[in-house]
Image 1 (cartoon, rainbow, N blue to C red):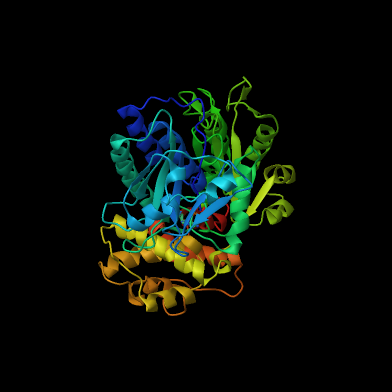
Image 2: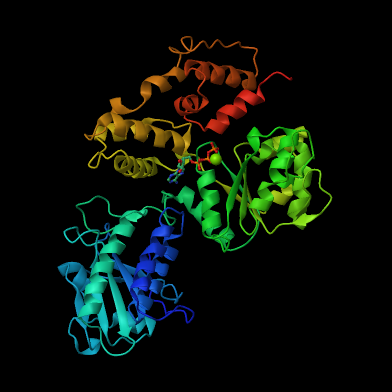
Length: 510
Ligand SMILES: Nc1ncnc2c1ncn2[C@@H]1O[C@H](COP(=O)(O)OP(=O)(O)OP(=O)(O)O)[C@@H](O)[C@H]1O
Ligand SMILES: [Mg+2]
């Protein structure tokens, strides 16, 4: 996808010191565990690189594993969104093919230089230095990093040694992102999705990404809707991480676990003596999120009293701590998520209609896994395989064809979370070998079928409501898991919050 030939912002320091070089890597490494837009990640890499190398610009070319050519995205020139170059052509193409660095003192006199990019971008190149990007010197080439126009004079031996070392670090960093190799032995990289750590390129996800990217640029309140386990929490973080608030806190409030009075104090804090046991002033999540983003998960479960206060906060950004007289302000962006139709809650009178309109400024419908296609299920499965194979120290774990067929045929009512759990279990059970269908946690999930229901102590009455039935079923599974709700959630392929919510929802009035 990306990479950028960008001018260096004037504000960045120009000294080439060891500290610069170190901080370049530290900076990039800090972005890897985040759901950052991968374009932005590579752009940052290029900016830092140009500064550290005393170059006017830096460009990162990547080898497209599917097409076999080199590509780069020119972020500063919208009319030239991306450039492509066959392997072996031009300086970058030569480096990608030979795997050796290349230094050019006068590009226009070098027969390997290809002026096509220059003609399209209008940027004139004189001196160049390019090095292969890969995770170690024996790995296949993933891309080429190229610095252009050394500020004073030409690039020297030291520059070359440095760029080669840096390109290796970059290769390592890339291997930890979602833009990485298909496997260790094949060349190039595969783009698994536009945001790091978020996998999926299906048409169903495209409009989700589009809305995430647009809303990240604003402070608009976002409502994420979707079934359990579809990635709502992950996407909420993506909005924050790609917004101007990224350096400030991202604070989550789980509205399912908050009974009435507690919800108010959780959100807005309380003063000392506000209620029995309030022996000190406590700041609420709204205050803790100052400058950043507040994520209200399962907003539909927020008690009515807090809904009214939240509405006021969304309108005026003003609030009071429980038991406090002073009106406080906080600069906080709000993102909400819900797994259920808020419209029903509005009709039932359990959710305020004015708040309903206020939170859905940008609405994002996250599709269930079954709407994303079998190809996407496999793509996600391979992503989790990679993730858990690393985590459990089982590199080389693969998916057998039979396992792939099993995945394609399963309905995944717990969506991505259930798939993730399947793969994690299978990675452990496969013990470094290929994953077979028998490694998936089928036996316990089969408890959803007729055979094991009784075993779990579940009996259904035909006159029961759906809520009562789901509560009875979930309680039976929790009992079968010896009261462990997290374990029950795993068996059911839903989140722990969902288990807590269902148990609470159907409970008889106290
Ligand atoms: N597109 C994706 N790519 C990679 N991982 C994903 C994706 N979607 C979800 N996941 C992973 O699946 C798990 C469940 O996702 P998440 O918690 O965001 O779902 P949710 O919609 O918030 O669920 P709930 O409604 O239960 O709160 C997490 O571990 C998350 O990292
Ligand atoms: Mg969630």
